[in-house]
Image (cartoon, rainbow, N blue to C red; front, side):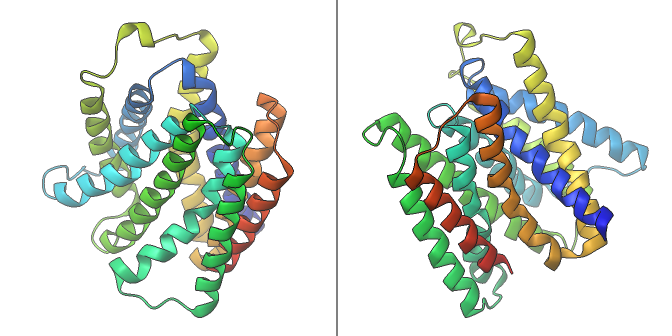
Length: 284
């Protein structure tokens, strides 16, 4: 059990680092190009792992399911995250991401036709109120760029919520490794298409540290976190593992303060705490 909990914590730590790298890379690469490079590398690794286990990627027989998952979970979620991190802090983005369990809850009765308990809806309401308070407490309240960044992170949470719920539906016919690799494959193609006509060479400002950050998000924050999370879930069970996702905004805030010297207003901190509390109630 302890090993499983440790793996879940490691997964959230690795995902938290993705926000820091995304913020750091905001001025080095256009968001669409960053997402393309990240998932192209991840796809190669995942396909290599599948080959090791002698598994084939059903890119044609399951193309509809994998394309939909790739759009929401890889292209929309990651691109919106990187776009948002260009204009708001990693700490703020991480606290908004506490709304991910709420997004999952919202789409569950719509997509899966499953009933949601009253306590979960109460947690959802609390979490949404926390996000509103958090957004009111941002440093540049009158900055259009910041407002857009907030919206992009909120939309990324909705995209991941839909990806998760659809993944549960498609999981009856596709195993997790194949689903992730297939999503990465189609998500990379969509990201590459989005670069056409929007990315210019003068928008690329890479350094040695920037390449290390790209390597991190392509391996540790993608493949490494995926395997740690799934291994942890297998040990402790999905129900007990779910609340651990709420550690993500906690690590993001800590990393943002320690590594990027970010500052958080008291109102934003209060809003973030309320959001996490609501998310925990919603996911229990």
